[in-house]
Length: 158
Image (cartoon, rainbow, N blue to C red; front, side, top):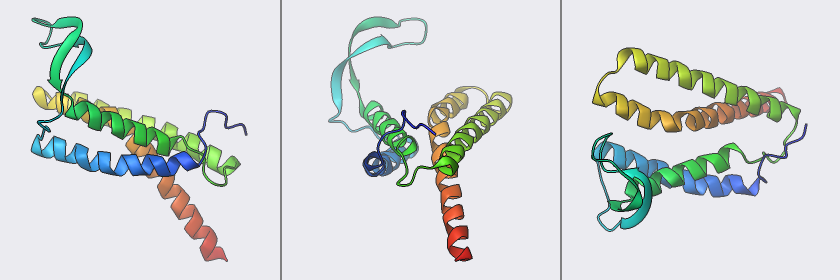
């Protein structure tokens, strides 16, 4: 099976090196509402300041970029971990990767459907924030769990 779209295996370690601290920083940001005061910058924004009314479009804004940096690092790390080849990339791994991705998307949208039915108001925005990251998280957890379980089963047979 061709794996042209996968990154070389060495990027997986780099991904974990980025993903673990970004996850910890993201948890701190979400539970303690922490913003690093030194992370203010003027950035280009397509839209900012306001929801429908008073919104500004296509301009520079002075804002705290803590969430932007942590979210970008999380996504970068998770993408590197998710889409780097295994050391021995074979048909089983390719099938597992495909089924794990399908499984992650289905579980993610089932969780989103539950949120649509059960969460209202401002807490729904929190759910949507977390929903941006759940496909990658579910994929990484399921893919690595099945790899671990399979490796353990093979070693138990020997």
